[in-house]
Image (cartoon, rainbow, N blue to C red; front, top):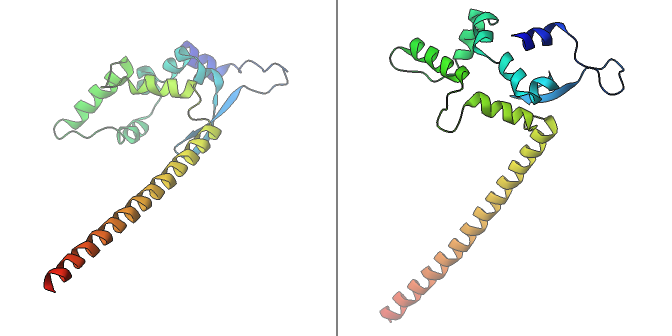
Length: 164
């Protein structure tokens, strides 16, 4: 926990200007903007010393642990035992189908995935893609309706010609 102790007690290195500003980076986490030390986001060693089993056991209160356990899967039998195994596996770096969620999160932090500007542009892209999807659906149903009406007209004409 040396890196964690260092982060909590020692000030961060100053920027190039040396004007006393800390090197912090804004992140959007669940709709909340938070400032986190850049070193925490960029350096995997620091990240995994802070986000570790020892932090879970020694720093977080029981109430905080219970709150975080709400986000874990529920198991029909021995729920608490399975959740504790899952937490141990998570912090030990085991893979869960497509990698370890903590390793994936660290890479996303490092790559700026949670930067407020990136989050904003990602939301705008999603909104644009959704509008494009709705437009293509509308065009598809318009063409389908035209085909159905044309087919109906052909069928009506055939029936009328048979009756005459």
